Image (cartoon, rainbow, N blue to C red; front, top):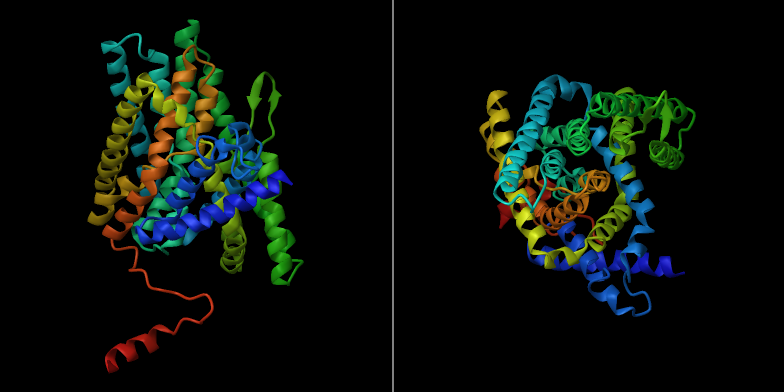
Length: 432
């Protein structure tokens, strides 16, 4: 009963806050995150008023399965952007930009935080500094996708952005595994090639293989159903199963094997969209079904942000340096790589701004980094940066897409009345 009340309050709170955000010309994603903060344990939830919100962070963590499922559908949707005809036009650009901007961001954050260590040795260790540098490469696909969907952004930059965000996950995984292996070696005095190179490569290969199998099986089974509702049900079941399987972990010959949820679901969506001739129609139906799920995802993301970190001056100092260095790294990394690949001027100028949001992937990396001697510092810095980026990032993404001319001016719509066709609008304007 309590969970149902909390979920309903989260949905209603998110929707009500979106009306306020619309008046302020802010993306709905920002509204959902703010609603989560207000309903979280450091605001309304802390009042313990008949579960009108989330009383503790543990209550939010108990609903983590909803966030995992939402990420699975988000990744599956982004995977549908990897269509072969599109990859032929900008595949090389996306791969080049995705890799170079991530590596440049990691390098710049490493440089800034190691410099901070040299000035204040007791503030942050070298191992934590290089680990944070790798975490900085990660970009949150969820916020980016929601802004694109809300404003129906479309154009060369939007297409490139979704491809780069997807590639970013694989690159970030490799960078983090290598950096964390080096950081552990600095603390233990020995380096393991298995942890630095082998295990992350195994994880990527296994994730891509599982995703490809899931996408192929979905296509094969879908052929036996012709009803739209049954195909939709089967697609949802397939994504749920893929999310569940991607959580599995096992050991083979001393090698820790696991999967990246985002990579698995992205690959499933990629394979499915390229071998199924009715994938676009099916994705439109899935988008409608997942709308409430995505609202819950962002409200829960806002509720789990720990505001207690704002009272720690040390975390704030490291966090400010981290945010500034990461922002510069993303912008100039994208700018230089876009210039190298001869992207259009608008893409070169604005793509880096759209890569700022950071959330779930970074938090997962920070959880692993807690094994370091001062891993708590890494976690708190990432929490602080997520708080800033998730509240500011979506609005910046929207502005960048508008500046690039890929978001059209919003018009009023009414759910109770069918909107007139564009031709009728032009005729009425002409007669007026």
